[in-house]
Length: 298
Image 1 (cartoon, rainbow, N blue to C red):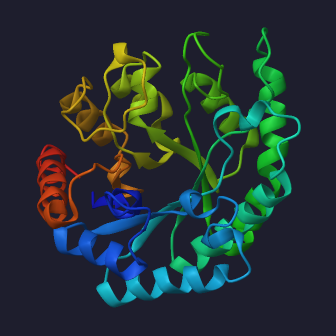
Image 2 (cartoon, one colour):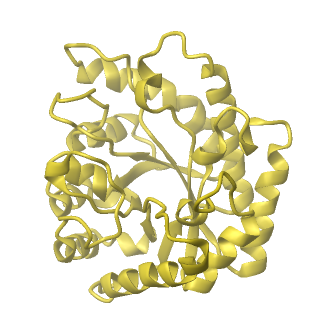
C-alpha cells in the first residue's frame, strides 16, 4: 500500500486566517515523505470558496500542476457534502450551489487524475423515527447524477460510512456498516464502492477490523484516523493517539486485499503546530504511517 494523506493536513496556516497555496501545501506533503495525496475538495466548496466561484477551474489547475511538478499523484478526492444541521434545514440557502459544486468535484477529480471521489451519503431531515429504507432510497436518488457524471469522467464513487451516535444525536445514514453495504449493493454498480472512515466506525462503537472484513471487496478508499470511543467526538487523530486497535486493522486490510485497490490515506485533523515546526510534524505523521504499513503484507 502507498501512504497518502488528505491535503487538509497541511491546508490552513496556523494562527492566521490564511491558507497555503496548492504548491506550498503539496510541496510540504511531498517533502515529508508521502507517496500520494487526497485533495479534499469539500473544504474548497463553501460559498465564496475556490470551487464555488467562477474561477474554480484555475484552482483545480493549480493543484494539478503542483501534483505533476512534485510527482505526487492524487489517489482520491473528497467531494462536497452538507454537514451538521444543514441536512435538517428545509430553507438551507445553498442547496443549488451544493449540487453545482459537487458536479465540479467530479470534473476536478478527473482533471487531477484521481481514481476515486469520496461522497457522503444523503440524509433525510432528522425525525424521531428513522427509516433505513426511506433514507436508502433518498440516497440512491441523490447519488444518481454524481454516479452518472463520474462514470462519464472515468471516476469511481466511494460512499463513506458515517456516524451512528446510538440516537444520542442525529442519526446519520450509513452509520451502521451493514446499512452502507446494503446501499452500495442495491446501487449494484461496479463503479460504486465504499470508503471506510476508521474514526467514524470507532465512534459508532464498531470493531473497525470487523467492519473492514464485512465490507470486503467493496472497500476502495480509506480515511484513516483515530479517536476515543467514549469521548463521543470525531477527533480525527493520528493513529495510536486514540483507542483503535491498529494491529487488527492492518490484518483486516490485508485479508480483504485492500492494498491492491487503494492507498492508506490519512484524514487527520490539522494541528495548531506553528508553521516553523510543521515540517517536523508532517515527517512524524509519515513515520507513524510507515510503521503501520510495515505490518502489512501488501
